[in-house]
Amino acid sequence: MNTIVSKIKTKKAIAVTLSSLVASISMCICCALPAFLLLLGGGPILAYIFTTFPKLLLLEKYSTFLFLFSGTLIIISGILRWKSRNYACPSDPVEEKTCRKLNCFNKYLYFFTVIVFLVGTFSTFILPKIYQNNPF
Image 1 (cartoon, rainbow, N blue to C red):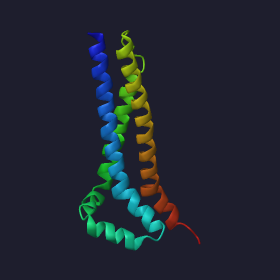
Image 2 (image 1 turned 60 degrees about the horizontal axis):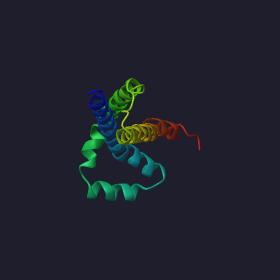
Image 3 (image 1 turned 45 degrees about the vertical axis):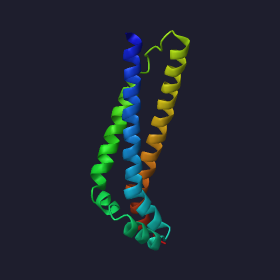
């Protein structure tokens, strides 16, 4: 019974981490990519992307909400990871190996999600402020 609960909690943590990764990547696509392309002088590329995918402008409109939503999901995922850090894997060798792989995958997925979120946050909110105050 305990192994079933452990598997469910591990899968729940992975599901929350995956959804926060999707939200972070969508934040990067809608907000960080345009800011980065404009910074590098890629205005024509950005115009082509927005003409090809006009729904990206809708994401751009709600970029602050998307930022808060993905940040909330990352925090929830971090809390779930923190709570499940001391769960014991089953004693069956096959199930233990699967449990350890899932925990390792979730750890790396979480750190990747945080990095994507931080890059998106930096290039969306901080980099434009730095670029605007550039004396050169």
